Length: 189
Image (cartoon, rainbow, N blue to C red; front, side, top):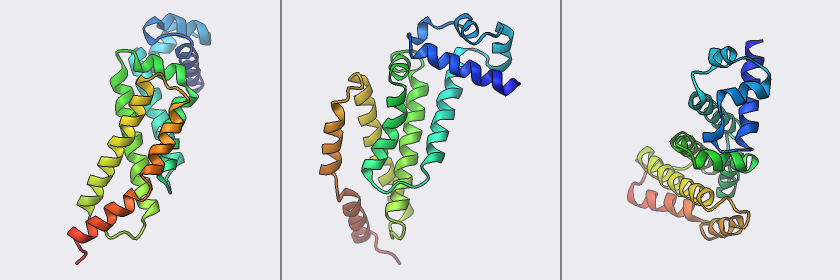
């Protein structure tokens, strides 16, 4: 029963977040929406920021588990943008709130996970040193994260996907080039 109530609180909160800015949502709004009392809310969550953090963290972990292997840069972008598209208004409300840092940390974690999965899947037998691998993952992760944040700060317009696809097309072969250069400068022993 406790898990059902907790899920109802999360669902009600997400519905409200898709309707109005985070700053306008109160515990009273959430409990009225899901038909519970305030004590039930506080049994599960300390406050609304705690609820928001749990939801974002949970969604990020679910996406990471859903995509343990990624075979292309295009797929990296698709995974990173998927959750944001599904909850466009909620994402905009979080991004424009004082809780933006929670969203950004989770987005960065998701970007790192999908890029690491991509490097491992697309280049399973690569001879890249672990130090170079970390640098490459960090670089591509930051590029992906920057594109995500740029897209969100620009209002999450659908037209931006054409530009993203073009960037991916222009970057085709980039990971292979990095692997090649890594081998040139640090050949395997």
